Length: 254
Length: 276
Image (cartoon, rainbow over the protein chains, first blue to last red):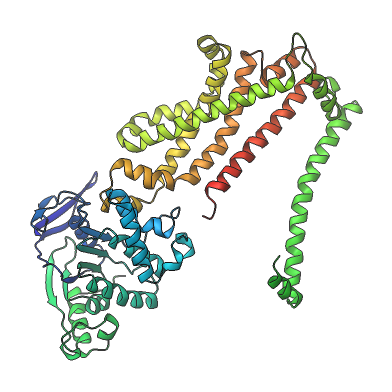
């Protein structure tokens, strides 16, 4: 991603949401982007996914400039947005349906993923019969069902209660690492960023710019990356947390 | 009631039993009052003319409706059977209703597709909807002839409001659901077929419920002018020869038809949205 900027235009004027962002994310890395609300974090994901086009600069994925939605990229939104008129299984294969890929194969894969993540009994259920955490897992399956190489997560746990959120973060981080996906997680939760990802990028206030870039390592728990929940007990956790807290310049304004 | 809930009912707290009693009373009061209103209305309608408080020439009696109905069942040389009239009206309503629904869905889709077109046409829609379409009955008769003008009036009365309700339904779809489809690279057509249309089924049925009454209204008004068949014609004919028995019988059948059509839509809706 090189010198990317984006302005929103309305009748009342233009808003610069992102300014001169240059980022490189190697394949297989699990990165998080944090920043205060309104700093353009979600916009950045929309640019990478090709749902929005930058007004300046270019976004390059896999050596090719992004010109529109790309089946290699899976994008998980803030809420599950499951379609209430479709069953869980039909929701999970929505991507394959739209992309016109082999439906039979997509169905097999969806069933396999849903079963693996504890939803095997709910294939024919409707979304409203499931709890928030289960619904979000269906949304993850929907994203993974199209077999993307890159997964974008836009505050995927923000709509959940805090217990579900920590438990699900463990699960999702594990799933994505095991599947070897390149993952970009957008969040405003510092703890979530530190515990889940290998690298944390801090965006400044609007217009969003890259403010700093931190590598997160937990040497004390051995070479392998520990599960998110375990990192919260690691001695390094608080150090990272405090540094990022200061970076974010969190002020509660009245 | 299942066995489990019966078991719990026997050792339920007195407060809970009290609550159940009050609930049951509310249900009985509502249903009883509904029937009561109908009975009182019918009795007044029967009694007031008989006591010469109102002129029976203008109101007929409820007790006259059934004999009149039997009488009108017979076909005469000038007059078709009342069942033929009723069928003619029902058929025209179904035609107008179906046309308005199909065209309404399509028209709303076109407006949804192009925001600019919607902005251009919006004032015309508002005026077309507010205008009394019945003013066109004589013109429709000239343009379309006896049968088609009835369908035309039915369509004209129901089309615009149907389109507007369905369009509002399309607009009410969560934009994030559309964004979700976009992240998979959906085309406009796919967004419509997979997100917008299935997502607005509840408002589609709201539109159909309004539409069915308006279609019937359009048919009756169209028949006033043009046809020699249909309940609208029968009402017109009966009032011209001052036989209010005929008019009231036709109106009673219209009421039954409108209830029946509503019930049909209600059940189709229950079938389609089952389990939602």
